Image (cartoon, rainbow, N blue to C red):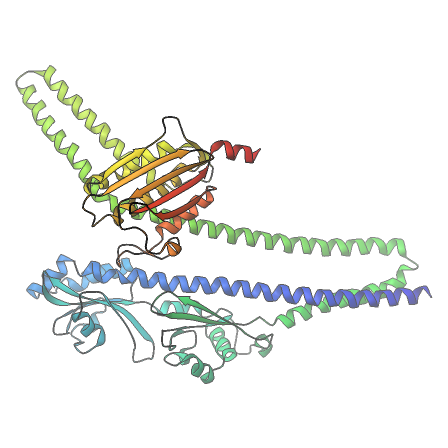
Length: 569
C-alpha cells in the first residue's frame, strides 16, 4: 500500500513539474532569442548609418584639397593617386577616384581604374549638375550594389573634375554571415541591396524569399563560413517558426530585415524535460530502495540536490554577469557619445582660441624686443618690467589652455558639491572667444551667495557649453545678438539660457536624437539629446520654450544640495 502511494504521488508530481517546466523553459528560451535578435538588429542598423555618414563628408573635404585642385589645373597627376591612397587608409572607404571633366579617371586608389571613362555614369553626370554631394547606388557586374558619394571639384567657379568615394558596404555582409539570422537591407523601393544571401540582391524582398527560402539561406550562410559542416542536421532549422524583424535605417528610406531561427527551442526544451523525467524515474526506482535504506540514500539524495542547486546557481551567476556586461557596454557607449560631443565643440572653438593665443604671443614678441633694446642700453631695471609683463601673458595663456584640457577630459562617476556659478563661469571662459567673435552682448544674473548642487562638474559644464553653442548658432543671422544667462535658487536650482534668435520651430522634436535644424554637415542632432540625458542622470530635467519677446529659452532644473542630502538620509 505504501509503495503504491509513493508511485502515484511521484507520477503526479512528475506530471506537474514537467508541465510547469515546459511552459517556463519555452518562454525563457524564446524571450532570450528575441532579445538577442533585437539588440543585433539595432547594432546592424547603427553600423550602416555610421559608415554612410562617415563617408558622406569625405568628398566635401577632398574637393577643397589644393593639391588635387592644382593637379587638375596643370594636368599633372603623378602624385595624385598616392595622395588618394593615403586618404583611403585613414578614412576606411572602399576606394577613391578622381576624374577630369571628360569623365576620364586620372587618379585612383585602385590603379587598374586609371584611364577608364565614366562620362555617362549617374554618379558623374549628377555630380556635374549640382554643387552638393551626390549619393548613388548601382549594381556592379557581379550583382553586388556599389554605394558612393561624389562631388564636383571647383577652382573658384571653374569646374575641374569629379571626386568619387565608394562606401565599403560589402564588409557588413561578411560580418553578418555565420550568425543565426538571415539579414537583408532594402532601399526605399523595397529592393534588396545587401544580404547574407547573394541571390536575394536586386529583387524585391517577397520575390527574393520565393527564390530561396529563409531556412535555406540560413543553412547556406552558416555552411559558407564553416559554422556548420555540409552534414548539418536539418533539425537545427526545424524548430519553432522563424522570427522576422524590421528596423528603419534613417537614410533614404532604407530598412533592415532579419529572419532569426529560434535555434530549435522545442528540441532544447525537450532535452531539459527528458532530464527531468529521467530524474523522476530514477527517484521512483530509488523510492523502493529508500524503504529499507532510508538513511543511506537520504545522504545521496542531498548530494544530488546540492549538485542541481549548484548548477542552477552557476547558471544564474552567468546570466547576472552577462546582464551587467551589457549594461556596462551601454553606459560606456553613452559616455562615448557625450565625449564625442565635447570634442566636436573643442574643434569648433579651436580657431577662436588660436586667435586668443596669438594676441599675447604678439605682445610677448614686442616686449622681448623692447627688453633686448633696454639691456643693450644698460637699463636692466626697466627691462625687468617687460619681463614681468611677459610673465603675466604666459599666465593668461596657461589659463586658456588649462580650461581646454579640463573640458576635454571625460567626466567622472562620483558626484561632488558644485557651485553652479563657477560652472557657468568656466563654461563662459571657454566660449569667450566665440562670443567675442560673434559680437554677442552677454548679460549674466548670478546670485552673490554660492549655489550648490550635487553633480559632476565637467558634465554640467558640457551641458552649459552645448546650450551656449546652440544659442550662438541660432543668432548667426541676427544683427544685434543678445545672450542672457540667469541662475536662480529656490526649491530647485534653475540655469536659464535665453537668446535673441528666431525661436523654436518644433519643440516636441527638440530632444529627439538626430533631429537638427542646421544645414547638412553642420551638425547631426545629438547635442540636445545628450545634454538632456546628462541632466536626467544628474537628477534634473532640461526644458525648452519660446521667449515672450522672441528667441528661445532653455532651462536646466536641478535639485538643490539640501534636497539631495535630505533624500539620501
